[in-house]
Length: 279
Image (cartoon, rainbow, N blue to C red; front, side, top):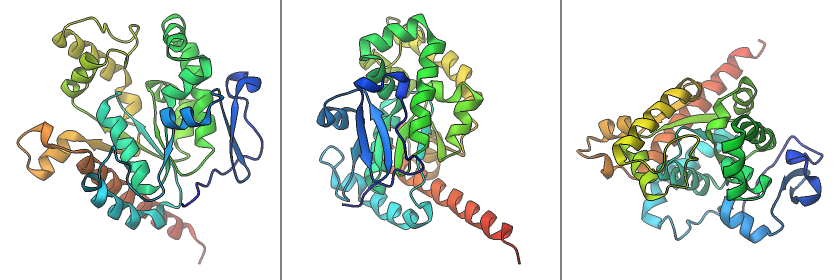
């Protein structure tokens, strides 16, 4: 199995200032501390890494082309981490996991790590509702650690795009805005009301009400989303593939689109570096 290169840090970072309760995940000379004493559960919930094979939850036919494309861009990517921003959705999550599998990266969800850090989902829910600013500051602490590492795919929460500090941290990797139609996200919310806190949207509302509130949430964070290095738009993929229905788009379609954009970005970076070299 190809090992992840978790670079740039030689000393532990006290995530949320609770060092005594954290599991220390170590690779080579780098450290990341997590608040869960059970490594197996933590990896199962929040982190995955591929050994080049495809997990059964993805299916071989669902990712074979993505794996092939990832192999083409991997050498130029050189372990650069990838941060996915945009409204939380099942498509964004599954895309992140598929990219991690295809690239043989580690996968993390920043909101889940914040939940772990503050004592679980219920504690995080209460924390966010009572102190949204404090919750986002906690996300900054998580992001600081993740951005200091390599070979990660991170599904980032909305707090990631709320401050210049966080946006600067995203520059340590490649950021992609996963732009999913609001009706897709609304369906996710109706099916799983735990995705958003009541402070963000009224999860007890009807489908049209949820969609309207998601629209307001989208407008609130859109400027931050737009700072991403590239946009991976479901609508764009639908148009390019000539599909009649948004539901025809698969995770593989989105992953291939993301990998193509990553390939473009790495090529531009390479050209810029070559242009900056002295004669």
